[in-house]
Length: 240
Image (tube, rainbow, N blue to C red; front, side, top):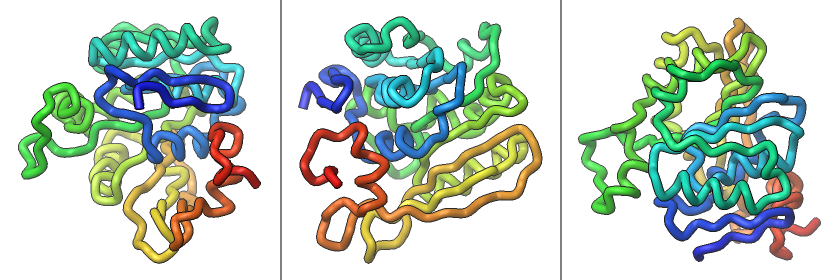
């Protein structure tokens, strides 16, 4: 599908390595962005998280993307949206962006590459491999750059597979971040959790642990999923 249509915006995804999936939509729905004035989307891809954040807030949103084609596609999607005056695509690495950035963010959001470089898992397509593997942005680098870009009261939101979430947690704590909230994601009511959404901050706080079931055992979206996604999805299965 070269174009994905939501209620308030469209996303062209012909040239981006990573197409729109449940992970990004869940993160875009659950991250607390409503009160933010400045938002940073790391590895924006098609721009889906930035667009969802724009719909849910009045923030100025910067979106960083290292891949040339994906950055161009995100720019196109931003300019085609109702929020083009506050969405900005930056074609560069996070590391370079952090070196030159002159502001701090209320919210940083990211659906990062998470397969470890040189692991047994490999992807033949080079563009898709960059988007999925951590060779250009390791989880350690992600944590170290986020803490530079986040303001003192801000939050960093990301989604990772359970195993990689535990690895990132170690790096995040070493960098000086504190886990504020963790949501275990269950793909179905009868399946074990396989993803985590985490909220990190720069101040010491008690961690809140939650869980979220995405689909019923019969494949129907759960009521909880319908409630958070109904503002975005057009499909009848998300109508309450």
